[in-house]
Length: 125
Image (cartoon, rainbow, N blue to C red; front, side, top):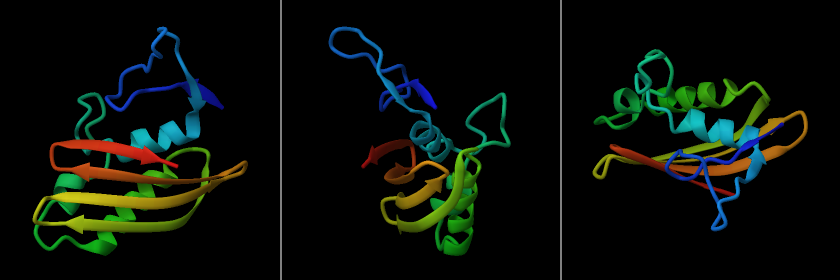
């Protein structure tokens, strides 16, 4: 399935010639789910990952963090399995790095998401 590419800021991405770019919607759906903080969207306050509650706290529970990320990945309809998941949290800077690999019926996606307390960014293979 294809979709319109969103830029790093979440807005519609346009090329230098103002053309839109088509992207793989599974990859983008995963990115959106992982960058979605719990209660961030006023129309769906129960949606999102509880980063402030579980990640950016003193002595966070790594098992809970892994469960949160795994649930977010599996909530993407096309994802059939989480193959690998590595989470690195830096409590001093309140940042987290999530590396993962997921399978769909058609492909395997590997990616890295970097999060910090007030912003989020993503890099994809």
